Length: 307
Image (cartoon, rainbow, N blue to C red; front, side, top):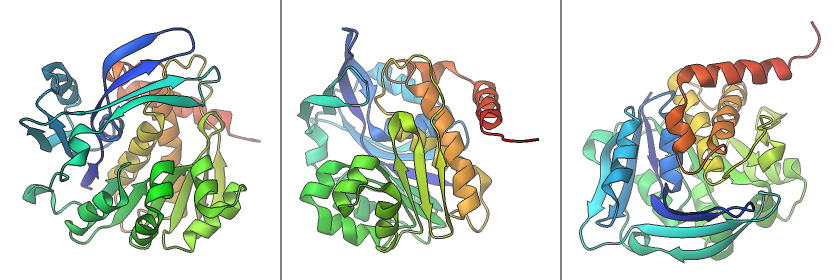
């Protein structure tokens, strides 16, 4: 089933606790999402970059052959979004070193006519009004899910609240759920968010996994025990890509059911566990579907109890 995504494409600078500093890395929410979801389906990318976007980065995107890049705009005279971050010792917290919005201050890209029949939509992290504009360009959807962050909860909460009344699912971090609802307990926060319209809420807890609060049930999944975390950048977007890619690949008339989302969350967890093992998309370019299936089987066996 056709999956479309909009979000950011950026050029990142990353500093890690072991003293590594990597500059000019391919990043952005839509990039990580598309790489992950391409192992399950053929994602359609809607995003924009400036004329400073390196050709090597375009080659990297093209190396994920399932990704449809027809909706990627390269704007002459514009500057690609840039971001720099420094991770703390526990790798679960980071400090933003700089943000250069560049093209994100311009009008968002439009959805190509060939993409308007998409049935599954993921609105990766961006301003809620940009996300709403994307949603309104599409026809009848089988499933729509939105991601958000603390910034939008702070400066655009009314717009975000309006958007939540129009989508089927929400993905956000534990701290963001607390920030929005005032509830530290993730289940209580999730139930609060369900009252705004979504059928399900996925609350990410980093190395502690995730919690699914669904109108039809609740479940918690642990993270895959990755031995060495090199760069957590994009882990949440990769997680979302695995989740949505798996749901789109399964298809059917009830993509947002409790059982479907729970099973797809496990795939998101596995994809994210690969992503953190190296910088940018380096690890994602090296793995195969067999690698994913093998790790998924190991993950499933870890959680199997009894006979």
